Image (tube, rainbow, N blue to C red; front, side, top):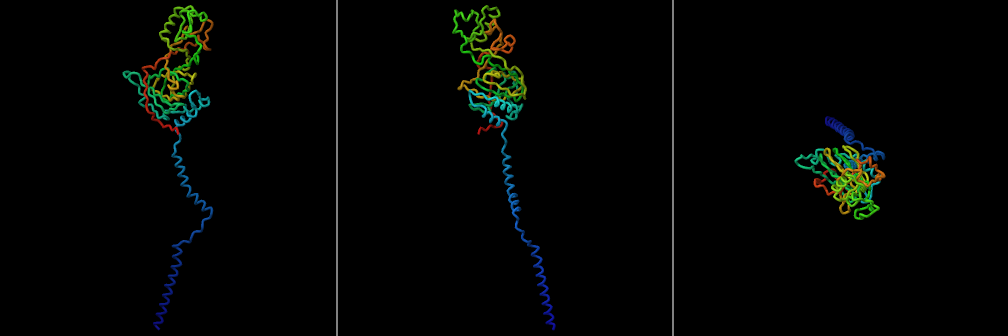
Length: 360
């Protein structure tokens, strides 16, 4: 009886344990193993693909941002390469305006300049004439880009730019500029020379006091006065029978940075000019084409003397010389005489250290 009761109680315990295990199996799996997620819809799958693609696109945009934009001097170089087409050509008006606009916006820092550069330091009087420094940004057969550094009181003597179009932008400082153009763009090959005249040439009506300079008859004074003879002697002393030509003043003024870009052409705009630094200056010059001895574009220097009424070929019948009012325009005229490169001119070349140019 006791055995049967014990057996019955044992069976009940087994059933209870089994029931507890069954309960644990039903509860535990549902807590530890979540139900599998439903398959993503087509729209969700598309969103996931876009989300994974965004970082790569962002990376590409980041790489594009790291590519630097062209510098101001690089854009200027590219414009010059388009505008200047070689010797014998002059930029079109629209091209001139484009380059002027670009140069007008140029700042000293665009070419790596600052007022404290050693090139601008004024030399003491005991050190002699200030040295002019220049650096070449770029040069090719069609054009060149150059910067000139002038200390205070430095002078670039009167000189020409044969067959060239030149843009000049004053970046720093103040300077006086005086420029000329020839009254006659080209010398007249039929002009009378001393070698073609004889003392009996009646048509020329020359007297012994005819003023002849460099072989050219510049004045024929039939009845010379004392003043005429004095002028004649002075002309001979000045010219020493070398070439002189009559020129008209185009610019005679002081410029201060920042100011507009100036442009000169082969025969107009002040092709011959002189720079005098009032304060330390920096000038950016674009020359197209550049100087070239091989192509007969060497630089010629001049000295000027004031124009006088009696030193011209104007006769007693009128005071007009090629459309110029001689009587009222004497201050705007001058004789220019070719000279050797002045010995006092000191120029020094340095390496360009501003933003680089790429000609690729």
